[in-house]
Image (tube, rainbow, N blue to C red; front, side, top):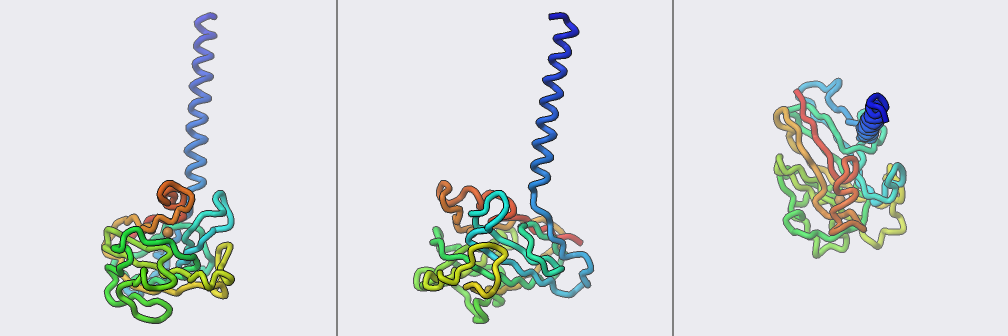
Length: 226
Ligand SMILES: [Cu+2]
């Protein structure tokens, strides 16, 4: 093979390699879930209302059988993402509509309400410490933001209600659910990792794979901006 021909072969391999890298990056970028923005049009000092839901099976997309969170965008539409942008130094009033059945707590620490003062309610009742072992329902997921010291156990739909369970997201309040509310202050400009701390990735090693490790399902980021 001549020098020129060898050079051509090398260049072809380099071009193919670069093409594969670009394709991989673009696939990743395309699949990354969108960020729902609660800062646009926000009046300084006004609270932000964040409504989210947890579902046992998302029912669509690349992993229809996975557990997931969804968020209600300011326009009222449910969006399948766990990336939220909120204004700094603002009260975030959160409502969680929890549609999933129980997964046992592996650590009772995560059954404790932390970091939200006295604002935690379950179906309108104030509760402080969840009695996961003494309730028929138990806990389905947690909403935890370690950096802000927040841990919110989300009561599960009891198995006696399984006939009314939601099978595909976004779930409608006509399906069996628990309504959990709490408030926290977003703090200064920063970015926080948040996630569920119950290993609810059924079928994965120790329940910690799949949806537990994929942005858009059981964990995401809170982008706090000025
Ligand atoms: Cu979970």
